Length: 423
Image 1 (cartoon, rainbow, N blue to C red):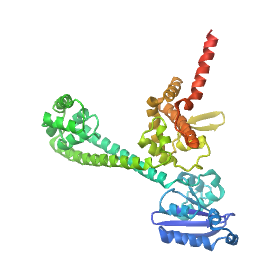
Image 2: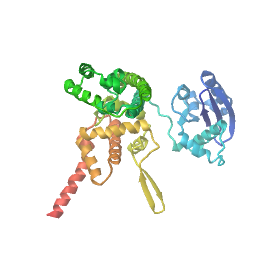
Image 3: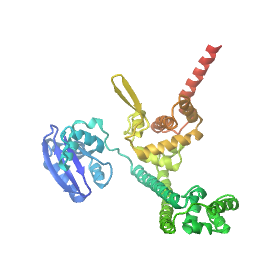
Image 4: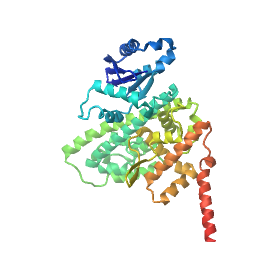
């Protein structure tokens, strides 16, 4: 076998090729793109064992193992298309492994390529190869991440807008419950400071509220007028003018992000609907199209990726980790995890409290043991991931009775025992 360490950068790759004994066969820096991948294939051909001549091409490709610190991009796609075994090594893992070779803290691109080659040569059994997900699943992942990132960007800009308003126009925060809403943005664009806000007419407020499809527009307009025209502390005129120039910029950014998010939602739904497992995901409690798309994209659809439910739970980041040393044992939440997937599963668990009686009972039982709200949601999400794994494995949709039968049986048995003892 041949083992390749690939330390990638924006415009080049540092490559090291080793044999099974760890002997370095080649080291090179190749450019990104077609020229670089061609050069890599040439190097492999130059150092291929003579025994490979008798093997078919697909078996030859299986004898080449690549370690690289990314799982996406045209370069990785080309490596997978060639049939190589590609392992996406977490940068944190390679950084820890580097200390075996350089305790002084020395670092170089060529040295990183050597570390990656050693990882896949010696410890590849402890790492996951890049999953063979379908093109549809990859597309869903890409679009779902773009949608989620746009929402996170909007949240950051809403917080910035809120911070600016709090400095010179706090009445706007009191008047508008949601600064990202259409009516709030429309009115802030028209009146970005206290002087202009106080001049807004009742008809203008009603028009903005009706455009945003708000109910009871007349009553809400009266409330807004009272808040915006109430006496309040003011900044000096020069500062107020400066702050007022910032508000329209943030309003335009948030408005544009709202439009992009709506467009992403449509595209995500279209791609998600084409996946054969879409109905199974949508049958899970707490899932709508957006959350289901995020989870499908992050888990992928390679049936060999997760050996069992426990492997899927560990990958999801919802299962706890245990640190035991001597007489001390501590159970902690996982923090080094896929944050895109973790956020989606946390939202699913919260939504499932209303959608699933079994999930609600499970959550209430955890809270009854004085477990905190977020910790209970993590445990519920962990349980839901196991249920999802079973549904995907058997190709069947979610069933409330089957999913929570074990927990209900245990509760019933416990209640029966308690009743018998009391009698």
